[in-house]
Image (tube, rainbow, N blue to C red):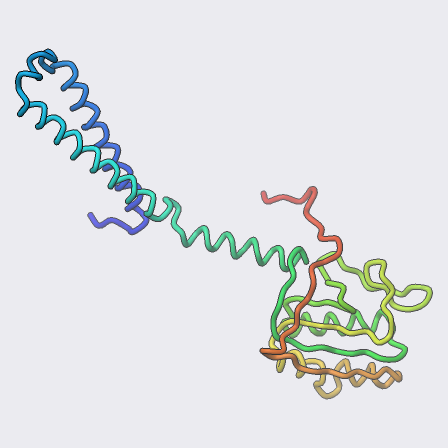
Amino acid sequence: MRLHPSDWPYLIWLTATIIGSAIMISLLGMRLQAPPAAALADDPAEVATLLASNDTMRAEIERLDRQLASSPSPDGGGKLAESTEALNQLRAVNGAAAVTGPGVSVEVSGPASAANLRDLVNELKSAGAEALAINELRLTLWSAIYEGQSGPVLDGHRLEDPVVIEAIGDPATLREALLRPGGLVPMIEANGVALAISERPAPNELRLPLALQPRSLQRARLP
């Protein structure tokens, strides 16, 4: 039978347990069957043998403890790393963590409506944008862009002109999606709105802040 690498921690633990039990039984047997102290005192060789045996067993226990402490966790280090990465991605999507990466910056000047900004954000998302911010306000799953009394509003914050949309993703892909002939940008520009699109590859990557009010699930849960 071949052992999977993930089985080694269990094998080490089992070996340590068996050896430890054997040691305890051996020591108990020595205590139960040991000759009187006076007899041991008269036999220095016997005392030396017992002390040497105890030292050997103690050293073996310490060695196994060190080996067990340095061995991978029973569920595997890979699973822990995967769980940590999934958690970090969830925090990034929810805006609970600042993120850095290549992407594009879109400066919108002029009479842009909330609908124009929503369309631009949706176009970037469709092109693979992984994180977005508008005027340094992070967008999350619950973000809403709507028309206020004096212009577009994002999550209760008025978007001052010019509006700067930053999107992390593949710079070339995002830019191409916005500038495709007959696409969204020409249509918006036809209404007197000016758009300036710049790619931000490494090392001039974007840095998007965390959301002002990251939200967590209150009622939704895994089945």
